Every structure is written in structure tokens, then in C-alpha cells.
Image (cartoon, rainbow, N blue to C red; front, top):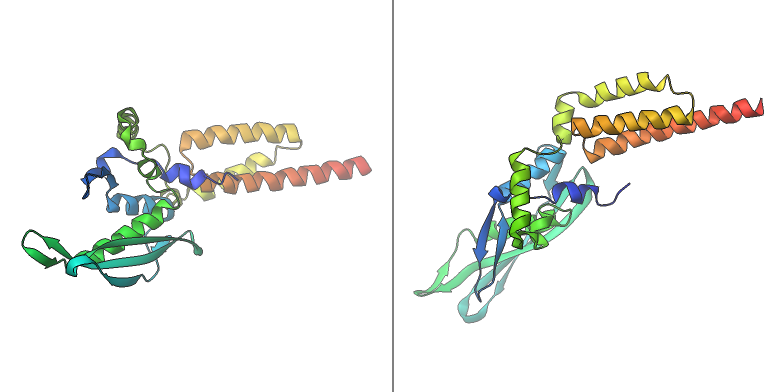
Length: 231
């Protein structure tokens, strides 16, 4: 299994769902719109609360300089199954200074929470190209703009499940497998299904599941060959 399959799939970002930002001190960059990140997770794993979700966050309020108050949030997300988790920390100013003096921000906790989730999601690759600084390259941004304009390269696991595609694939696979009596014929069948996967936009998870099916078939053929040799 390729350990970066999920990262590679979630790591590309649609430029239309990003926005520039500037911070104090002249620092600037590109930010991913949170709803885009949530949509990418939903496309891959299903609705929030079913295929992925967020565990209860914790908040900490810390005094800052000159009367300011800082709020920090620690949150963990799960994906695929509850024991697959990633953590993130976010922060904001609950009370900050402006030209009129101190002012409170009733959105600070929500901002810190959103920041924490975004940081957790990037640990599994969501928007990795932005976080790796690749959006500083206009050529790369234009490439992504063209790619997303053409539509996503693959369908999501959730979409394929709704279509009942996996059951159809398995039924056809087991039918095709009946004609495979040698490892050579099995390799030919693998090539056929690799082409189908590329054309149909199968996800990495579905490809891995099919690899397991092929591994089982290969083991059965080898066991049969050993029995025939021993006879």
C-alpha cells in the first residue's frame, strides 16, 4: 500500500476556494476556505458524523500583553473509522487592541475552533499544496485552475457507494476470475482492471480493496498449481 495515497488525493486544492491573507508584520499567504476542506472530507469519506467527524474540542484562555486575551483550541478529527485520528491546534484573540483601545471578539472561539480543525485536516493531506507553499508558483496555480475546471479526476468513495458501483465491480470481477486458471491470465486481468479503474475514476480505497481480491485469487491459483504438481 502507498502510504501517501490519501495525501495525494486530498492534497490538490481548487484555487477558486482559496483567498489571500495578510497578518501583522507584513506576513502574507494563501488560506483555504474551511468549507472547501469539509467538502473534500465529505466527498472522500461521506457525511460528517458518518464517515468522518470532530471529537469534542478543548479551549484555553491565556492573558496576553496590555490586557489582551488569547484563546487556544485543541481539536482532533477522525476519518474512516473512529481510531484513525489527527490533531490540530488553533488560536485567536478573544480581546484585542485596536485604535480605540481594547475590544472583545464574540467570534474568537469559533475562529480558534475552525483553525484547529483546519490544522488537523492538513495532517492527513487536505490542501497540502497550499500548506507546502506551492500556491506561490503562479504556474502551478494555473495548472490547478485548469484541472478543477475540467472536473475532479476521480469519483468519491461515497458517490461510488451510492451508485452501488462496488457490488457491480465485485460481481463482474468474480465472473471474470472464473476464466483465470494461470498466473499469466491473472496478470492480464489485472491490466484490464487497471484500465477500468483509470477510466471510471475509482478511488485509492477501492483500488486497495481490489488488490486484496487479486491477492486472494493469486493465492488460490498457486495452491491449485502446487496440488497439481504434487499429484
